[in-house]
Image (cartoon, rainbow, N blue to C red; front, side, top):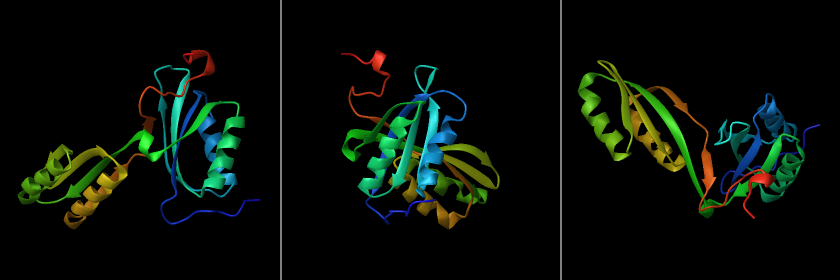
Length: 180
């Protein structure tokens, strides 16, 4: 049975950082925990860490505080999960990546380059009738770039999930690797 969803339209974005064992089916178990409760994952990014036996997951959800706290408690019980932490908005650096393909005549390329420069984006592919732009930044920055480019006709777009690390020296690490 799926629990009632407690999602709100805005202001309740939570970023969870997880350190997990780098093993098959870990992603499935984590995503399944959210799915069983009827919680939608807004963004999910998984990748290797500085130690090959671990992966870092960044999970972004839009929920009220109580379900987030419940999800954290449940995640902490899963065997492949080493550590879970909710990252506060003021205590994290969070970024996304986007690739945007625009079908446009060559006469628009200069204007598109100027827009890309404004957003510190890169032109990564050029043909006579198309451009591909790569940008990294906050979700708000990438949303603004997409909105600005929409008038040119975005033909294809691929956006990564958010990745985030806590500011300063604080770290997620297995207990035996933490400094005392």
